[in-house]
Image (cartoon, rainbow, N blue to C red):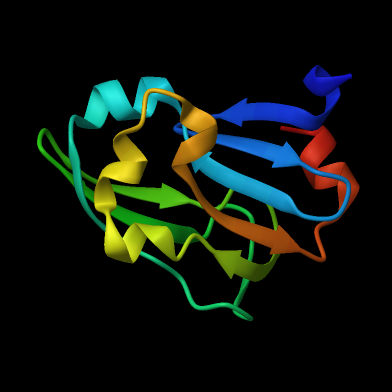
Length: 112
């Protein structure tokens, strides 16, 4: 069942929890980028189109712009990131969640 609700695309994982689509960095992205030192978080309520620049991540090995994997509206951001950026360096990639989307077309998610 979990496989149907968790998808990976490029540097992100997308988890549908039945209500929202949570997004975070994959372990592969963490390894590729190195220690994450800064992330530019989007504002809650802003709508993004699939493929539009969503995040700018600064890390030890690179600065990377990450595109939105789906079209939707930001419903929440992980506020713990502001207090401790090392959350994004957690070995358990599910702890490295960044934000959640609402109002996503389920077909967008299925096509990942």
